[in-house]
Amino acid sequence: MTVTAYELASDGGLVSIRLARPGDRTGPLRFLLAAGAGERLTVVAHDGSTLIGAAACARLGLDSPTAEVACHVAPHHRGRGISTLLLEHLAARARPIGISEFVGGVADRGEALRPLLEPRSVVVIGAGPRHGGTGHETLRALRDYGFAGRLYAINPAGRPVCGVAAFRSVSDLPEAPDLAVVAVRADLVPAALKEAGQRGVRCAVVLSKGFSNAGPVSRQRRAEVWEIAREQGVRILGPSSIGVVSTGSRARLNACLSPARPPAGGLAVASQSGAVGVALMADAARNACGISSFVSLGEALDIDENDLVSYWYDDPATQAVALYLETIRDPGEFARMVQALGRRKPVLAVTRASALLEQAGVICTTGIGEMLDTARVLIGQPPPAGARLAIVGNGGGLTGLAADRAEASGFTMLPLSRELRRQVPRGRDNPMDLGIDASPAQIAAAAETVANSGEADILLLMIVGTRANCPIGIMTALGSVVDNHPDVTIAAVLTGGNDGIQTFGERGAPVYPEAERAVRALAYAHRYAVWRQQPLSRHLRLAAAS
Image 1 (cartoon, rainbow, N blue to C red):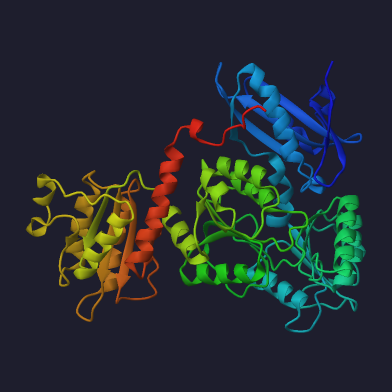
Image 2 (image 1 turned 135 degrees about the vertical axis):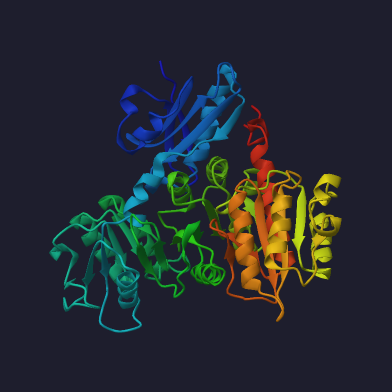
């Protein structure tokens, strides 16, 4: 007989928790409950008769004390502490069979975000003819960015906007769009969402403001939107979002108020703050940091950071994830999910919850500049295989300063072997300053020799441009070194040269304007590499039984 436990959720509601039964394998949790190999335990949570969550663990090997864990809570029951209760009960049932450690797994909750980040059709509700209006500018951004799907506008007159067909209401559309972007007054949002849900829309970005917890009117609107989303089955991004961008080939989408357009690349970005999101996009564009997607969470009434982590876990276009989080709805669940993601891809964050996330392998930086600098060194190339750093260039005194900074940051500046010094001009050692008059070919040859030696895990190239040399020529020559050594982490510092050179080589190794920024980014990358090489037993452990 299955024993059922009753627990109070954080909102005071009563939930029941028990071992899973065959009849529980239905609904949106079926992917989680069917996942995992080996010996497995699954517990489920019910609110009344409604299945609202599940947690499962699968032992990683015969008699292993370690099991991979996954947890999922239905979207409209998140923020109630359900995942914490599930994992506590799962841990209590795992200990008697010898499982003393969980390592994070990622549930299939990211599937629901495909209409958000890979829509085939989009409607902008509130897209009027006025330039500067939120709806108008969002529709124009979608059109100008080259969205290849079907695009519709909704306005009271039903008149075309920016050459896009318009209708008076969502119910008049010839199809149910995958994604609705809502840009109407706050008091009109509930009706717009209800109509969109009734038409078959399954995901909506709410750009409208006026839904904070600051006053009774805003709180009432917030509750109304939440209830409509539950009734209609619509996933909501926002309110107070500035939008979403996806640069992938499957959906070239720019439904975002940020004026900056970073190039396509491997970094997925999320921000709870709209202003910080704009700054992140501008910094990425300025430094040629390519993004795969950008999501402005806004109030995060429904779609949150956990949903995004789950989506990006399997997204082939995403090589690293960067997050700006002012609050985290469920820190424990989030830490488990980013720990699992971090084993695949680097996760970087600016957040107040640094201590918890650093344990989960998140690269916690002090600002968005540091975060993007570090992301650039981790995209398109491996994290450092070790702490041995070599410096090559024509940087003179700057080369020595960079070496001092590197040693202070924990890197090892080992002397080059006698055999290696015989192969470079004048038998120079590490750091290797070739002089300001060194030609592009000479600098590239020395860098190639060091990269090929196996004596350095990281190669930092210090280049100074003058009127008498050719920085573009030097960086072009060094690009071949990058491409010849995919196993070596490489970055460059270019001072006094062309400010437009942000990357070099086919893989886009980063170029920084200052040695301090380059060394700091490499230090963060190295700490991440050390964490990733740790055995699983060093990761999050179950609390001891009380």
